[in-house]
Structure formats: structure tokens, C-alpha cells
Length: 201
Picture 1 (spheres, rainbow, N blue to C red):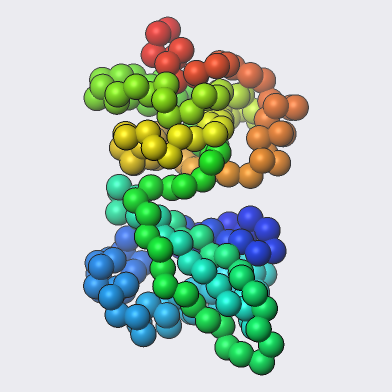
Picture 2: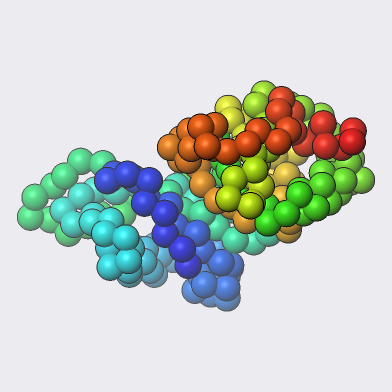
């Protein structure tokens, strides 16, 4: 389990499939509203302890992203503050893929990025250019960062892309601040559509 506090009102929770009750069966878990609520409240208590995300006296909304590799990303959003009431968990809205509009992945070496691009080409992921109009590879602190902006959520292979890329690198951030750091202090290694350009090397 991993927490990413985006701001005072929004938190992302990364949860492995086997960390869910019912042996990772999401349908069974979410259909048991009492168990789901208690589980989320326990997770939110842990988030408060680890990253200081406090939902006391707030109504909250939880959006769930079911990744193709079986893991989950939950986005918790504080709604209105209600004094003198317990935390209220609204029904979970489930999506199939991450709905972030921009995202950054960290590759430990250029070879890892090259192998990812070669694999994408080998499995013939259709029209990869349609995924994002701005795909750039940066070199920063001896690591390679792939930055994707304005991600097209209607791209038909988006789920396959998300499940594939995590085999070669680690999800790093969706924060615009780090994207600015890359532009300012990183070295732009491959510009424009970095994935397609790497495939053509």
C-alpha cells in the first residue's frame, strides 16, 4: 500500500490486488458495503498517520481505478466539511484505467526505456501517437523520466499501455511541479513523441 498526497483535498492510494479483502476479488469486496466502508476508513486512518491526510468531519468521494495487472488506484477527494459527524464514504466509482491527465514514469536506464518501446512495437499497440500529443524523455539525476501530457482517455489501447509500461519502469508522479523540474533541470533526451522516435532508432 502506498499513499500520494496530491494536495490538502485529494489523496491517491495505490493498493496491490492481494491487499484487498476476499482474496482480491473486487466485485465481492465492493458488493459488501459495510466491509468496504470499514476497510476504507481503516485505510484513511493509516493515510492520516503516514502522510497527514485528514478526513475527519468531511464527506468524501472515492474513485477506483482497476488496472489491468489487477492492482488498484483509489483517488480520495474531500467534499464539504460537516461538523460533529463521522466520516462519510460515498459509493465508489470504478474506472478501468488511470484517469490522470498527465503522468511521469521513471526508468532506471535508457535500455529499459528502449526495451519498453521495442516491446510496444512488437505487440503492435495500435496508433500509439493517439495516446498523448506530448511524450518526452528526460535524463535527470542519472535516471530517465517519460513525461506524458494531455493523455487521451479515449485511446482504445490505454489499458494495455498502462499494464505494459509498469513491467519496465515505475510510476513516479502526476504532479505538474515535478514536470516543471524536469523541464528546468533535466536534459530533454528525446522530444516530441519519444516512444515512436525511439522505435525508429
